[in-house]
Image 1 (tube, helix red, strand yellow):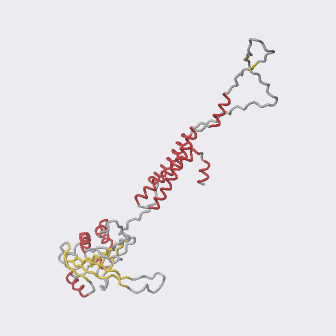
Image 2 (image 1 turned 90 degrees about the vertical axis):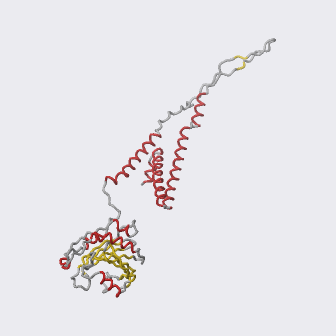
Length: 360
């Protein structure tokens, strides 16, 4: 369809249109190739620019040809301007005369009458009125400019679907009833509130990956294991391409000192006690668990395996360490861990948003 349209258009409309299209696309593609360092785009842009240069050369040659006079017209004009001039005719004498020289008489030259049936000389035809080449070129460029302006401005005035991924949200689609443990616990955090305390634009910067956006955000209103559902333990998790951050609050009566003693009996590694915002805290490392879920109707998804190493910072819920703690855990699928200062920064970002444990 495009080829047929280009063949139908006159020369002085088609060529400026091709030049305008080739130059716009060529410059645009070359700009994108330079900014994004794309060699393929650079090659395509070069093809557009070479094509445009060829069309410009063709138009220049056509303009020069229009300015030169036609050789056939010049020869025809010279032939019509030529008029036969009378030639001198010698007159014969009747005999030699002494003292006289032969004289030449000038007279008009007579021509034989034209023969019957001879066609008269054809006169040059009246030249047809030529189209204004510059007007056609200007009209073609104006039409293309109007089309380009419409295409350029239409996204601003017409609604279009946003292809960019939307940021994750902590809001839950279904609000389930809280377990009874949350009603008996004074000022407990819910999973959504804990997620809002953790997730924000500063979290990626605190992790040392400011250019990343969260790929998944989740929260839950759980209860602690082996407590019969009597201890509230809300949880929130934010996943990035590099790291995953998990925060949970356990509203039990265990102090941080008792929790450190319990860690020493477990498999935690690199245990280090410290204080964060004046509260007792402890750092420890442990391996996560990796398991698969079979969604094909099987009875199990496979055995539980050891996952990557995780680093956890546990901080008391109040300065007097009356019981309960907040766990901040960071890990990555590659096994790399951030510095301990990153976990401390995250804790200082989250803890002020969690109410301290009131006196009992």
